Amino acid sequence: MRTVGTALALALALALAAVTVGAGAAEAAPKQPTAPLVWTDCPADPSGAPVDPRLRCTTLKVPLDYREPRGRTIGIAVSRLPTAKPGLRRGILVHNGGGPGVASLHLPSAQESGYPREVLDRYDLVGFDPRGVGRSTPVSCGRTASEVPYELVFPFPAPDGSIAPNVRFARDLARDCLARNGEWIRRLTTANTARDLDRIRAALGEPRISYRAASYGTYLGVVYAELFPGRADRFVLDGNVSPNATWQDRLATWDRAGELRFEDFARWAAERDSALRFGATPAAVRASYLALAAKLDRTPVTHPVAGPVNGNLWRTLYRLDSYHTALFQEIADWWRFLADDGAGPVPYWWLAKGTPGIPDDNDVAALTAVLCGDTPAPRDLGHYRRAVADSRQRNPIVAGMGANIWPCAFWPAPVEPAVRITGRGPANILLLQTERDPATPLVGALAMRATLGGRARMVTVDSGNHGAYDRSTPSCAVTAADLFLTTGTLPPRDLTCAPDPVPAAVDG
Figure 1 (cartoon, one colour):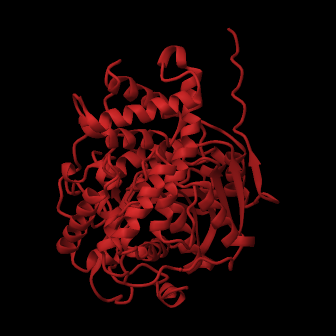
Figure 2 (cartoon, one colour):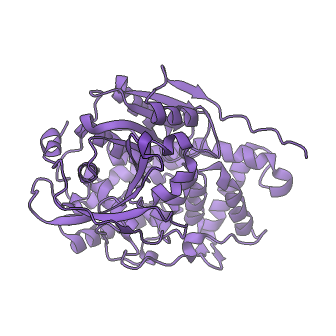
Figure 3 (spheres, helix red, strand yellow):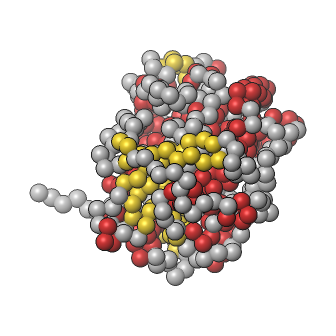
């Protein structure tokens, strides 16, 4: 829980380029498992959350490289939580927690309480750790948790705007990942994960899958639906990315998205100025935030557990907690501590210990592998210097981080082109989106909607949470998703709404 992917998993839990080898490789998947699955008790959830005793786990062997189906295999950890109403059962509802690099084996147990009974009656809930992640054959770059710090994994430039530290970190991480894993890490791609998902379908004896996922999981979902359109049943994709962009272009949208989301936090803080004293207006809160970041750039503040908190770690902490309005108070707690005016919050991911058998850097290694294995990135360092300089000026809240360099600038070319997403296929996809999502901004969802055309409907909520299927903030998105999963009925047209009104308190 000490590295980047698990912090993202916390936020996700609260919120909850030409067709390539494509059809030929996809249809090569067997219709029946090659060996019977052996189901056992599931391991403990690394988050410490209780595991539903009905959840069962197994490991499925899949090809490392689908172009060599008889070659080396890797393990994929799979879980299943059966419906209590077999007579009403429609099939399986598969989950992915995003990332890339977020373990999803325990999502059925974690997500069950978020579904209405009508959905639970119709599906076995299925989770899996994607290839390279967690209890699946894990990938590593050979680094300890302290060697993959948040503020460098997320490439915040130096206080003066220099990207030299980011270039060194990206170059060295790419070197370490490739040296430790050889060719295996280059097969850790979204297309191959989609093929793994179809092997899971076949192994479970299901003709089709339904699917619900957020963030990066939306991309995995449309890749699966493109490769296997006849095997996709009801797909709910929440917090969507642009389907045919490069990862570098997707990440660059974070900078503007951070500005839009900060407006929500600034209003929230200004309304509580008498207690917080960050500023009586949103503009004043913004100025105070930037002043604190600049102060920490010069003089970090030491947290008793997290250690020195500099300006970029503060920007990272703010950004992660901006994923959900429920975390705004934690931002305020950090802010007051760093301004020398309050007790320091205890970030749980610093306290948690690693999971035996899973490398400390597993989530970072998997994130890197997918980003760099899916799409190429610019090699010219000047491109990143110019992009960061421009974005820092226009988007100071996250200081141009999204436009900055990742290890992909030093990665070999992808082993296959990205799957080109189209509007061909059945109309069975429901897109959910909030207007000011800081991680998967609206601009990406609009591109997804335009690309899918008649295959999809979209429901947009006037919110800034990372994800709209969220029972703590109910809305028309939750209602539409539940109806679609239960009956297969899509909205007749795209919808936009505000979150539902908060019920009035009842006396007595």
